[in-house]
Image 1 (spheres, helix red, strand yellow):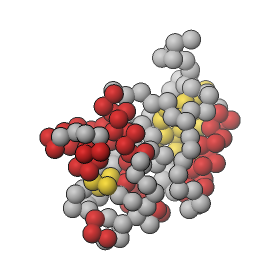
Image 2: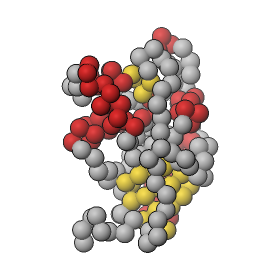
Image 3: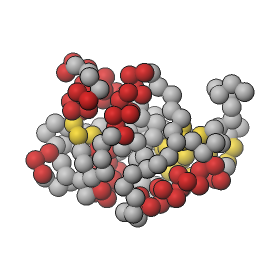
Image 4: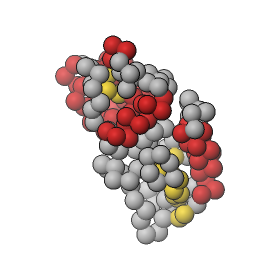
Length: 172
């Protein structure tokens, strides 16, 4: 069956960020994780299959993360993006728990020019996997909290949960 025509499987999970919506193809691989009111986030559609069993591992790991017991997700992702976006998203995966990086530093990691920082920001903003692909760990060069599709309050909550420090050692 064509992946574009495959039914979307989903479940929801209560969290400190609100009700999370997890989607995938039913194999357990995540294609998106959205929060309520997220810019570009997903909402259940007619024909989608409610399938909590397909997301057991994701649910367990998310609960452990929010409890402060998990620092690195070991989940399978099935996202679709341009080659550039996938490269930026892979670089996000390398930002460790409790650390932050700037948009410019992330651009340098993927070999993008200074002029491409805005494109890197666009790719980060299009990240379909909030929380598990840690776009919340990307901050402004001056240490400011900037741009988060789930809202800056959620970004601050996630960074606080991780004990992250912003630029120059200033706590979040």
